[in-house]
Length: 197
Image (cartoon, rainbow, N blue to C red; front, side, top):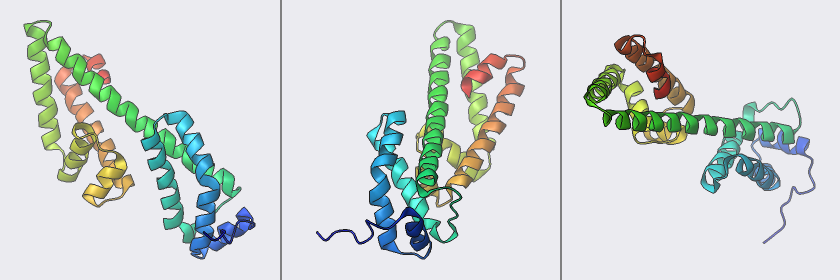
């Protein structure tokens, strides 16, 4: 295997070459920074699969946005910041999923505590399903893929052939509409709504 041609090239020069579409510059950045970004993400996530997906995504976006790449600080700082934000997004999505799962489990277990709770659980479930059905088509699809199939934003974007930002917007709108729908249904029982989302 021949040595990489840009091992002695500075980060600043690599960034310039990258903007020009130089694949060897990208490969050097990848080899130079993959271990560091992987280590940073793994320390926070403790999941090899999630870590590798996040780091790969950082480099994919770096290549896709290379022509409009503007680095105000060092390449190191730019990549570490991109990885940090990707980790935070991943943690936030997982927290939302976990809260949703716990709320469903709590509501299901409350149903076993008596007839009144069972009726409330059933009515709440029906209200939630009705609210989901009232969502616009793509918004409803995004919500179901996220909450019922537990797909990541990236997986949903790929499946629906839309951007991750669009997925995020649809999910935000869905949650907002469902909160309002449940709030109207439950009246003053704000703690139930809070536990759902």
